[in-house]
Length: 431
Image 1 (cartoon, rainbow, N blue to C red):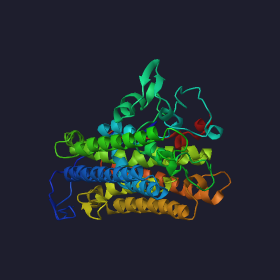
Image 2: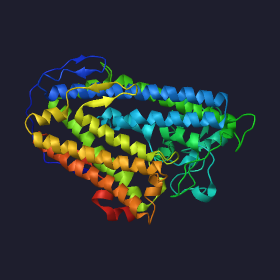
Image 3: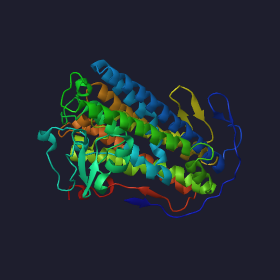
Image 4: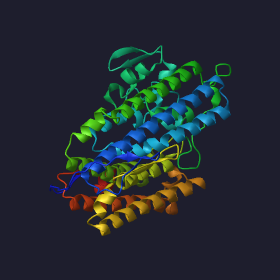
């Protein structure tokens, strides 16, 4: 569902700004204009996807160490590396909406929720054994060397990145058949979270990967799947990191637009992620249903941080700044500076709303430190927890309203922000 704004036009000047210094801070003494804002937005994307790739490579190193010595300590180290890899990636999601190249690619690395029975063993008591809409609901690739997909026999003897990407990901055209990306790896590292809306994440034992002391069978194939999925994640992130380098497809597509269209791209990403995706599908829907299956990082109980960094990415896009994983900063021409040049009050209001959202996200992070992770917060009859989540949703909605004011102030044409039934038509959720 999309929310349409009134089509209108924009007028702004064009001056390019240059980068300088180890923190990659742009020359902010020059007048900020649409072109400089859009170029800096592309520069930030290059840094964010580069960091996403680097942290995924670190994850691979941790997984290699775990597979070499499958102890509980090494499993925990791999889990910690997975959580660290989510930090830059979640801040990239603001680029998904408005940039077709990113949106077309995103499902390979961050699709959710997933029918995890496609990949490995599950608890039949909580998961069931079959689905009316997904023939591969409990296919268990790790336990099955031959599969029937779309009426064709698929040889899964060797679990490779190619098998995952070409035969398993969205197999049979079903979106819930998520075989690749962060969440497939998350499931392999944590296993199912069988705690419902009570505290606790997945508890997969390290011995599930131990060739000499194997639990739950097929440890050799589980190891192969984890390695292949991680290699595939790195390959996919290399693709997107390259897309934002000089001459890369995503950067070229963005900069071939007019500066006005570039601003529309930035604001489409901000508003669509805040409203329809993060506020609606990832947060309000789970709250309405009180369903832990609707939480984004459902195996690891890391959803509070995923939501925090999604919101941080929106703030980054407006302020024109991003803190890299090495602690350095990328700063430069921003929407904030552009708006402040002739409407300081609007810029101040936008920053206040972004800060309010960050505070609401931080409240969920703080609750998680006390054992109330997102799945606990959305539990039925958890009145205080539900309110924390609702406050986050409300702040995202308020933020989107001011984003629309920014769009109107710049006279941008025909922007359609993503919507969600959970916010726009709540009754449809229960139909």
